[in-house]
Image (cartoon, rainbow over all chains, first blue to last red; front, side, top):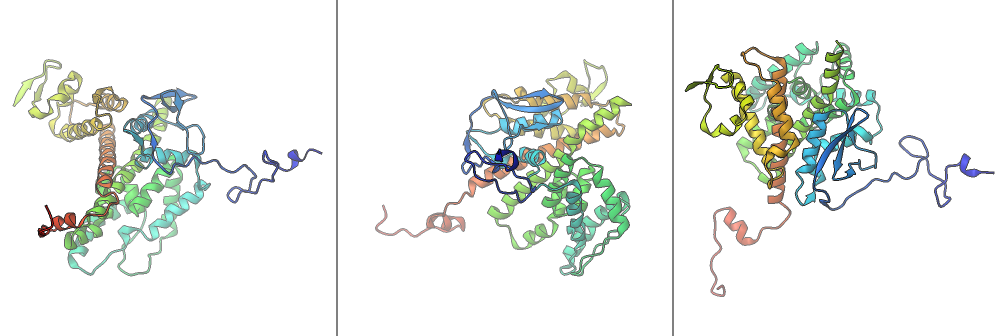
Length: 280
Length: 140
């Protein structure tokens, strides 16, 4: 009897365990992990197109994701931006400085294995504890800052998404009405899977769904969005002073993260815009 | 300062001398027709080119795919009048986002390099707060 047909066996004959994520029996995932920055092994980065998707070539090697799948992106501008990221590596390949590449890796591999609905749900969950909704009334200057800078964004959000989000000064999070939730859900599910990866990243870095959507809808630019999300921090810094190796490093990191997320969403959606134009 | 453009024979405003390199391309010249709207766009473009110089310091940024792509986008989105054009606004927003991405990456790298885990010597720490270690007779 051929056991291999019934029970998936490894090459050495051992039984494969069931995967905790997807309940399937596949081999151990071979993630290429680098504990040290790799040396740069290529000179030229080029783009090639196949089956309507764009690949990145490092000399003659095709770029792959950490799990070993072929790295392909849907639009040319995104491919150009990623090629520039790989081009800008000097002697070592610093993967942590490639924000767009890691967003693409996440989109291609979906390492958390969540469905679109789960992602939307987790993003929506942020609205209950949105940075822009939790106000402080303690130092009056800060309260004024918050009213002046955050209120316009919140009212824009309420207009644009037919929502009724109200800021609060209490510790209890405000209840989001069902109507608002449905409107937002409808809007978020109109984005494709790739764009949602970017939106989620923007929400996590800005710690605010309202700001992330304002950024994606081009209401504010990336740096303004980040400054708005760090309003209280900036206020305290202006009072108590700054710790360069913490505040500045974090700011630069978040600046890159937020703009990478916004750019990713815009570049991913580009092709769909062009297609509809050509069809009409 | 105003001058007639030899390319499109319209009146254009001369931009400051330091931006001359943007105009070595005659097609981008035309973008200047609406100074107010394009001034910001040009500043962003200038910033982008500056950042792209860091990508491959030993080469001219003109050879980069990103440079060619950005220039192409800028050229195809130029509008002569000052009308609010959505595509142009979108391009400007995208250009700004890309600029802050490139800046963020570079600043982050530079800061990390500067504050990489090393302990300061007593002398360094003293200098940080504007003090100097006393000279002891044993020192040379």
